[in-house]
Amino acid sequence: MGILDKVNSSEDVKELKDYKLVPLCKEIREFLVDNLSKTGGHLASNLGTVELSVALHRVYDTKTDRIVFDVGHQSYTHKIITGRKDQFSTLRQYGGLSGYPKPSESDDDAFIAGHASNSVSVAAGMAKARTMLGEDYNVVAIIGDGALTGGLAYEGLAYAGASGEPLVVILNDNNMSIDPNVGGTARLLQKMRVKPGYISFKRRYKAAFKKFPRIYAFNHKIKEWFKWHILPGNMFSSMGFYYLGPVDGHDVKELEAVLHWAKDRREPVLVHVLTKKGKGCEYAENKPECYHGVGPFDPVTGKMKPSGDNFSKKFGEFMCEFAERDERITGITAAMASGTGLDVFAKKYPDRFIDAGIAEGHSTAMAAGLAKQGILPVFAVYSSFEQRGFDMLIHDVSLLQLHVVLALDRAGIVGGDGETHNGLFDVSYLSTVPGMVVLCPSNYSELHDMLESALFELDGPVALRYPRGAEGRYKDSLKKQECIIREGTDVTLACYGTMVNEMLDAADILENEGISAEIVKISAIKPEKYPLTIKSMAKTGRLVVAEEVCASGCVGEKLLARAAMSGVCIKDVKLLNLGEGLVAHGDNALLMKEHGIDAMSIAKAAKELCGR
Image (tube, rainbow, N blue to C red; front, side, top):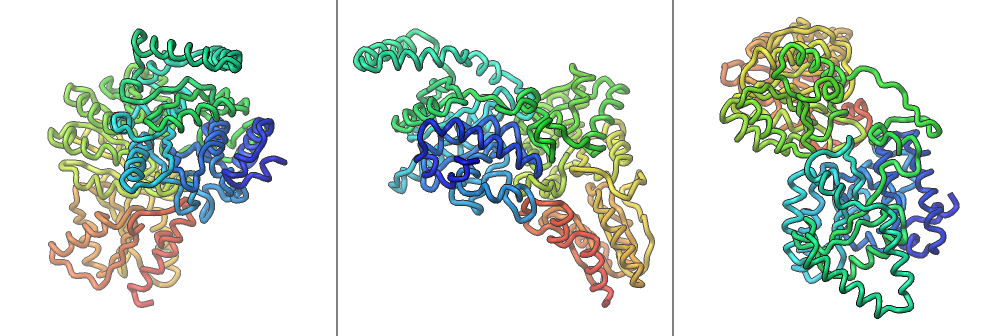
């Protein structure tokens, strides 16, 4: 790591001699593989953008220039260069380095990133602000071809290209999202890609005419004239961008030269860069979809620890089971087939599987169209991603009360991905959707039974929200909206989903201290009736509600409102939740303890209510 040891800023990279750049990139890849094999994280995407990140830091100063990453899971090399390599042993861990750009972590991070397709819009805003304030800095947006499947990307491109604001958009084209790209944009970019030999020819041609700049300039003007007046233009040129590329994304000097050119043009420029996901690591190159997000692994062989069952995997199995029963069942994903467990469904029922790309709004509206015409659509999507489909849930699904099933994966705290991915707002936003039924399975058995009910028994929009990870100690399946799973007389503990496991542990702690806790498990948090919980509250006179969601619109608030409307007076209440919902990255157990929703915190709250 001789060269990398001396790199702690953009300035350090700029001062390196050209012959040190290739060895530096090799050292960075070795550093990434070595560190991520211990901590886990995003491997393939970062291996594919090493040269691009180095070239960016050769051309721009990230202390003043604004480099806006899209999603941000490819920002590790940027973090390494900007003085954070010594913190990589804490990556994605509680109190440690974030796996995404984070301005509070470093001034070199221009903007937070975690969801796709927004970088051009953010960068366009920054460029406009620069002009309005009369300031002088450069603005760059880095967006992947996968993110171009999202409609927001085109809103940003349409504005930025027409604005005339000096702005550089780098299209990192590796023909992948997490899974292979789909749709018309992917086919369009496929046509725009050229063989690396063409890029080499252009470089040799330019070098050959280095001594004859006037001839080169004349020939270049002729080529440009033909390009603009005879050959059909590409999409980006039509939007108002000066298009450069495709460029070899693994040639630092080529990238550096093109980025300088783009920077100097002082107009909207799009640089089309071809990269290979997993570059430089054989197992990651061969199976980039398997090494996108990884846990600890063997750095030599790439072998990962076998993963056991989890909610996503079981959901995929149950979808296949029910699809065999009813041929109308169709699975939809927004570029997350493997993440949601629908990959097994896609293999078994390819004609009834739809990957819409990174397009949650489109997927939700399309599900409404499918349902209106007699199909039974199931849209499997991460909780935090479906925030983008909220308008369509009301306008396209709810107004006609269409039978669309939402499988909301990653509900609750998600661990290492942190605040951009935590599913802490779905209870709040789903509660406002008219006619929506919200089911909260506590284990795999309930996931099976609730999915079956959502498909074959209920009508209208139905959402199932379940967490990332595995089930806990509670294994029963109760087909009721509410159920008392443990009787008591001193305090009511109300919960839903996998929080039941913390409640059971808390009740054990309380029992050892002579406090009798009654646990009410709510299986359907909408419709918002809760008669059994209200009855229990009236009996014990005390209530503790623990929820892995934000405070606003939480079930605890609704329980108190229902109790008040029912004339039930209780002595005291503790609503335990995640406040504003801004929860950092780290181990789930540590985060739950930090925010006071673990078993010990629940028991402590109950003891305080009981005067202990």
